[in-house]
Image 1 (tube, rainbow, N blue to C red):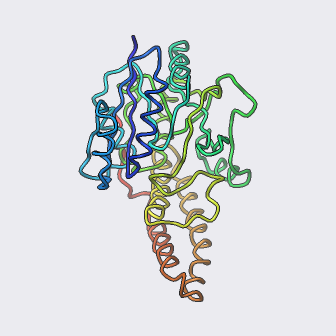
Image 2: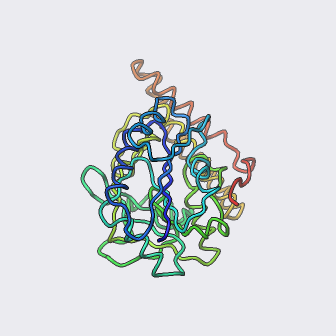
Length: 320
């Protein structure tokens, strides 16, 4: 019997974590022994107790600080000795056959290092945006023009991709000692892209499996909804921080894997976009007193992004 460990990082979403664990147990794999570990990133809302009471057989690691997604998962991965590992978002749920489908894809295809399931909305089961390529300057321009994408439309067989969806990635356990852990210098966002780059450079294929699905709420911890669901969402303090972390992570990704001139162009384009998007909140701060606090918070967040120096960010950490 093979072994599968599922790592779930929680930040103030205990009820969704319980639903996630419920689905894993209800649709447990038939070809692997299942172990579930939850890492609580200093939620401070009783998550550890709530999750532990609902599932006393599940190991819950209580972190004293919010480590972020990469370092949180590394709490599980660092000492992991298993055949397969699944990184699953706290606001995701598997369906019947999801785990077995992913496991069989890896068992039957030894050149495949990691797989991901099709990611759909938990509400209406519509396909969520699924970025499938490295976010180069041209790729980001293409996505800005074309919008959300699902790279396996009309297909049922596996699709080879440059990157997998971070909400649901299953790896071979052997890759933990070769490709390494997630890079903990990414607090949130793009740590999955960085890992996929390293896996592909090591010669492994990455597959999207359209015939198996996970249901995903999206943005439950970050406050940043998936593309297509954002609309005119109100930006909370957490969401504003995640906007900053997204850009900091993208700079770090480029610093690791792109030429310096590409990083300079990314910084220039990002700053221009931030300046343009600051015009509206600036006018609101001047002309609409009722919106002044929200506008000021957004402007402060934008100034933090403008102040980022992509060449002074810390280097890689905890990726081996």
